[in-house]
Picture 1 (spheres, rainbow, N blue to C red):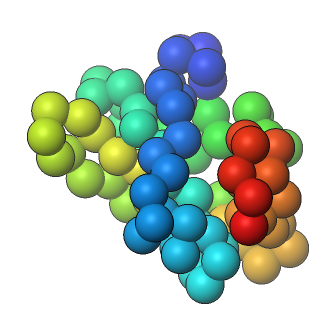
Picture 2: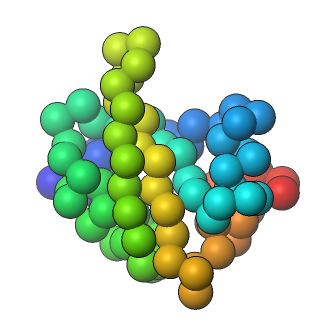
Length: 86
């Protein structure tokens, strides 16, 4: 699958911004059919970072992916590229 079809948009709530700052995590709304491996590969290809772990949650009819980056990659840098000021 194309990484831009898997990653719908960044989920930017107050809690998600806190995860960027404290836990080096990004939150995306993703395609419901995508599995964790596809999500990991999509993030690595789209942003050029290494992913440590992917957790998913289906809530309110949408699937969210909580993506923990490896320590050498900074979630704040990607958040700035997405238009979030951290």
